[in-house]
Amino acid sequence: KRIRGIEIMPKTLPSPGEVMNSAYHRALQRFEKFDADGEDDREKQDLVQYFENRLMQDVHFDHSDAGPSQTESLLMKRLAAAMAALSGLEEIVPPRSLLTANPSDRTIRAWNDSCSRSNPLSPPEVTKLVKA
Image 1: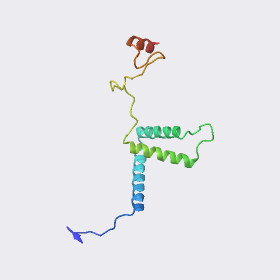
Image 2: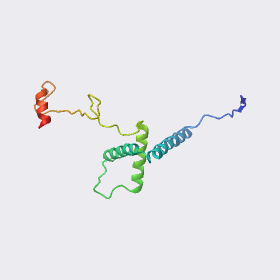
Image 3: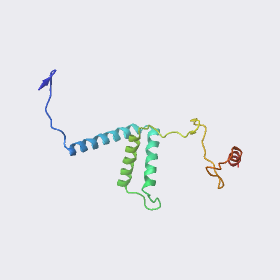
Image 4: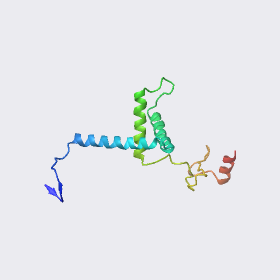
């Protein structure tokens, strides 16, 4: 059948295997593009490194032994890059104050053993704690 000069070929619905294969290849292409774009982009490299470090913590990798094999390292790197790509971020979010959003400010949470929800630290106690 031709529509506006273009021949339309009938195609059956893809099988679940074809859908999964296509999804794999799309994810791989997205990873490869993110990875290639990041080769000269320090922010993307730092973002991937953040995810890699977190993954190493989550799998409780013991850094005192011989270390991961080359294959394990490659898989961890790919997983970290994929997670970084899926995060939608281009770089690690810079630290900033949660109250003012100013990167030069920091928000801290201060408490001592005697404080509670019903008995929080007073502003002078916080100042004393921070200046100590």
